[in-house]
Image 1 (tube, rainbow, N blue to C red):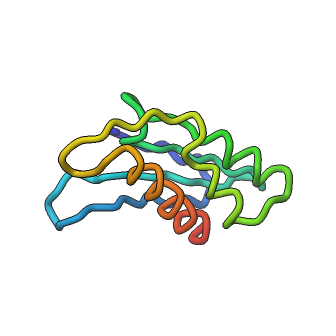
Image 2: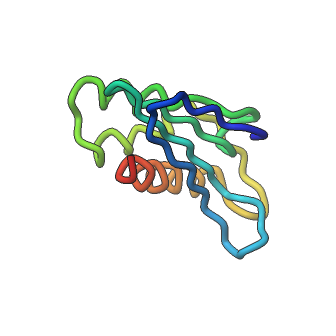
Length: 104
């Protein structure tokens, strides 16, 4: 990810999980809220950054943050590597997404 554009009036956050201070992030989450709508983007969960539409749809239908964040890995295709397995990245995506949603 090289840039995040947040419209005027939006509230947003960008979180990442790293094992050690200078490691590449295992999972990154960008979240913003504008006019009551929430948008979530994930990196390290597919070959390119993707939107977490499952989370966005869950929030729009009234689900609470915890249940909505549990849908963060829907539609993702994380690759496992020496830093983290695909399953671990899916687990982290839900946790980091919940933390991001709690901040906005």
